Length: 552
Image (cartoon, rainbow, N blue to C red; front, side, top):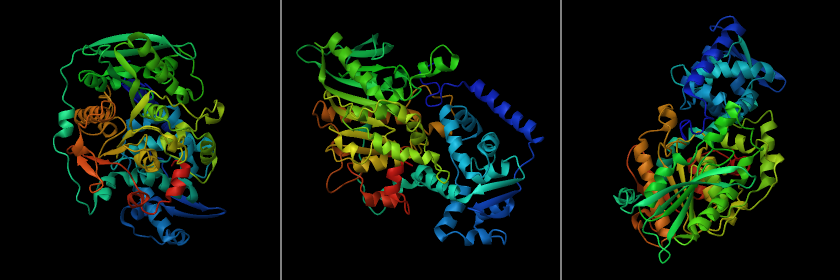
C-alpha cells in the first residue's frame, strides 16, 4: 500500500470499508428484525431518578429550543448552562460521513472511543456497543451529518435510557474538540488590526535550484528491527560548507512519503534531509499486522520513537558526516511525529500526570472522545517510563498537528530547550486544536517559538497520498496547504539554523502580536504566545485548568 493512502485510518482499504458498512447494517437488520426499528422515547436518568420524553420532542428542542411539557421536568433539574449544553450536544454536527464513521469504528482507536461513548447510554456495554455502532453509521448518513439527535433516532430499541451526567461530559468534550474551533480565528483577531504578510510565504515555497541526490538506505533499530530510511544530499554541500540537516518524523499509520515533498523542497535550497519509516507505527508496519505477516508491536511503541530519529541522525553522521552538519539539526514531524520532535526538542514526558488523567477513561460519568487522549492512554502503564528524549544536536523543531497532551504537562513542557513552530488546524478531529496544540502552546516559554493556526485545516491537510479519503476529512485546497508548509518550514529553519532573517513580515512584534498570512480557504494566524485570556475567549465557560488536567 502506498505510504499515505489511508494516513491515520489503520490502512483499511475502501473496499473493506464498504463491506464492513454493509455487514454492519445487515447485522442491524438481523438483530432488530427491521432497520425501521428505532428509539421512540429517551429515558433520562439522574442517579436513581428517571424521566422520559419522546424523540420528536427532543429533536424539536435541539433544533428550536422549544420545550415540550414532557421535557420541562428534565430541564428543571439542570442549570441554565447545562440546558444550553444539552441542546448544543444534541445538535452539534461533526464533519464526517457514514464511510468515515465506519472506517474509524473498525480501528482499535475507534473501538476504544466507542467504549467511551456508550457511557452516555444506561445499558450494559455488551448491548450498547453493537447497537450504538450501528446507530452511529446510520445517523451519519442522515441529512445534517453526525449529530447526537440523529444517532438517538437511529438507535435500534424503542426505549433508550440515557445517563445525563455523561451527556453533559460529552458536551464538554465536543466543545473543546470541535464546537469552538471553527470560530477560533475570528475570536483571536476580534477587535484587532492584524497586519497581513504579503507574498513572503509564497516566495518561501518556491522550489530552489540546487540539485540533490536521493539515497535510500536501511539501518538496524534499537530492538534489532530493520528501519527503512531515505536521504537527500544537495550537491552544493562540501566539507568546507556542510549542509544543515533536517530530520523528518512521519505520523501514525503514515510513512516518509507523506512529508517527503517538504524534504525535497528543503533539499532544493541546500539542506540535507533524512526521513524514515518508524518500525512499529508506519503504514507498512500497521498493514503487515492487519495482514498477519507481522507481530502486533510492543505496547506503546510510539513513546520511544525519538530514539529512532536520534539513530537516524547518527546514521547520517556515519555515512555523510563530512558533508552534513549533524550538530545543528532541525526536526519536522506530523501528528505522532509531532510528539516525537517535541520530545527531541527537550519537552519531558510526565507519566505521573498521564496516570492521573487516564483514570477518566474508566469514570462512568466522564466521556473522553478526544482521539489523541484515548490513544495516549492505551497501555500507558505497561511501558518503561523514561522522561527525557532530548537530543542536544536538535536546535529547532517544527511540530505539525502534534499529539502532545496529556503526555506533556504544563510543568514538563517547560523543559523545551529550543524554539518550536507548532502548526494547528482548526478542523482537526484527530488531534483537536484547542487541547492538543493551543493549550500546550500557552505553557511554552521558549523564546523564538511560534504558533500557526490554519483556518479550515484538518489533520490530513499537509499529507500527500490521501486523495481517496472523504473531502470533509481532508479539508479544502490541499495543494495550497502543502505550499504553506513548505514555506513555513523553510522560513523557520532558515531563521534558526542558517540565522538568515528571511521572513521578517511573518514574525509578530511587541506592537503587532498577531500576523495573518496565506489566503482563503486556508488563512494562517501567526502568534508568538497565547495567553490564558485568549484561551478563555476561544472556549468561553470552559474550565481550562480541568481541560488541561484531563487532556480533553
